[in-house]
Amino acid sequence: MTPSAYQQQIRELPNPGLGLGLRSKHFNHILEQSPAVDWFEVISENFMDSGGRPRYVLRQIAERYPVVMHGVSLSIGSTDPINYDYLRKLKQLAAEVNPLWVSDHLCWTGINGLNTHDLLPVLLTEESLMHICKRIDQVQDFLGRPVVFENPSTYLTFCQSTIPEWDFLRYMAEETGCGLLLDVNNVYVSSFNNDFDPIHYVRQLPHERIVQMHIAGHQHCGKYIIDTHDRKVVDDVWELFALAWQLTGGVATLLEWDANIPDFDAYHAELLKARDFMQEFAQGQKLKNQQGNSLSTISNPVSFLTTNLSYEING
Amino acid sequence: MPEENVHSLNQVQNWMQAMLVTAGEHRTPGGTGDRLKPEDVIKASSNLPAYQHLAIYQQSYVARLRECMRNQFSVLAYALGNDLFQLFADDYLEAYPSNSYTLNSLGSQFPHFLEQTRPESDSEQEDWPSFMIELAQFEYDLSVIFDEYADEKESIQSAAISDDMLMSTPVFHLFHHRYPVCQYYLDFTQQRKPELPFPKENYWAVARLNYRLKLFELEPMQYVFLKSLKAGRSIQETKQYFLDNHRIDPSQLENAWGRWRKDFIAKGIFTRV
Ligand SMILES: [Fe+2]
Image 1 (cartoon, protein in one colour):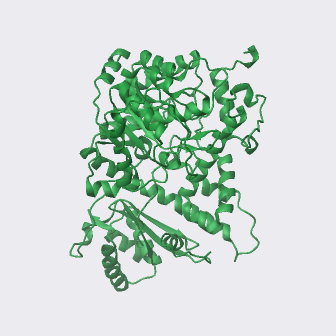
Image 2 (image 1 turned 90 degrees about the vertical axis):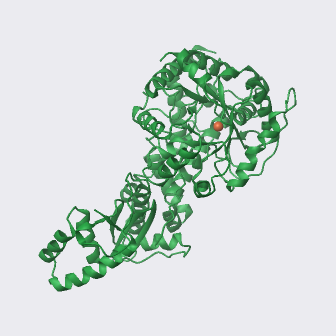
Image 3 (image 1 turned 120 degrees about the vertical axis):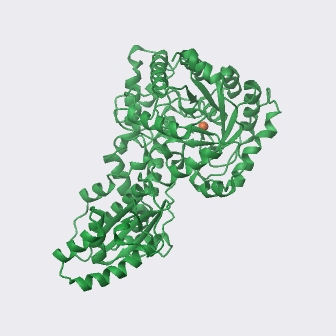
């Protein structure tokens, strides 16, 4: 398919509303209570190799709720060859779950056959842009669908980078027809760590390409911020969300919570705060820093990347 | 930017990965171990010098994989104590950095690594490394069984069924250990704070029923019997195999089988052919 055909598909994607990440801790609650959540986002890697309970639960949830598949291992920016073994499994899971869309991150996770299991920052240069666009074409053609790419939290800027990330994402979308997932918390985290203005970033994005937003909590460590997904969303991020909501005209929104996960109702309540910010427009508001409590300082906590091994063992 | 400071995409990725993955000296903030220095590749920000930006990734890399190992081997971590476990885990992650898109298999080579690097033991009595290696292997095996591909079938509830209609449940595994690792594992999961056990040969079964794992101890003869069923023999064939290979007379065997049958059905490990 051509980039414009993918772009057309992206344009036609629905807005399912406010969603939550599907976490193993909440499996039983969701199956038993069928809570009124608009949709669930699932980490593809938590399910694609499971022939046991995670896959079994996902099949049931996908029958009851719209589902979006969010991946962490595509490694679109890597100079390694594309991992077709991984892509085959991703495609198989998508055929089973029938997600509204499939997303991953603008990042690389490793080279020379290794995997750091981190979302590493890409070089923002023309060489890198060409490389990534070519790979997006290959991945989309293999999957037979457009892929949605998220701006990751970044903790460094390469000396060689010449293209601002918002422009890089725009060019990617224009060249390949891919969609964008705007993580407003990541914008906030990256902006603090790399000295840019988060409001400017959000304004410069191609808003018509954005199909989804992420919101999340982070850990402020004084001189830098770590994207920990382990607590409530700070007001500055809510305000950035309000701005993005206005500029995009409102898109599917998901609250990420991957460590120190609260019970389901508390998680849902935090998500529903988004409604309060949908009407508000935070134009020109000065974003202030907020100090969080020290719980964890690992970015992309491990539970984001693996299923919790909660076996429910019986003797 | 001076010409010699322009690096290809591949060079930058090679450099950055080496700073995260290879020898520990790279991981200490500011450690380079390479011709390039962080400030050659990474910009300083208003808050942090280049090497500290890199250090955020270095620290997260180690912390994330350590946490994953601790989750994958939580009982072993208890048995070894956190400090010793972390030493082994760190050495392992250096020797076997992940080469998979999934973290599920991060610890797949850990039992093998522990075997390779086991400390010399001078006494049979205090052979704790053997226990730890068996425990590590068992813990990893459980994670594989948990996610094993299989269509689960309903267990047989009633004993009123003929032998030729019985087969073991699809996800069913047998373990023979020199140390009581399964008991230790169960004790830990039931918050009984087990102590380092003495060697004692033992036989266990792990069944996945309704997507949950069930562990139970077997008599040695039960183990042999179930192992034969798993090898594809019918119950009739297994009985014959028993009579041919073990010193047991037919009436003794029938007696034992009657007892085992009830027990296995009660445990849910039989399903209909
Ligand atoms: Fe995100």
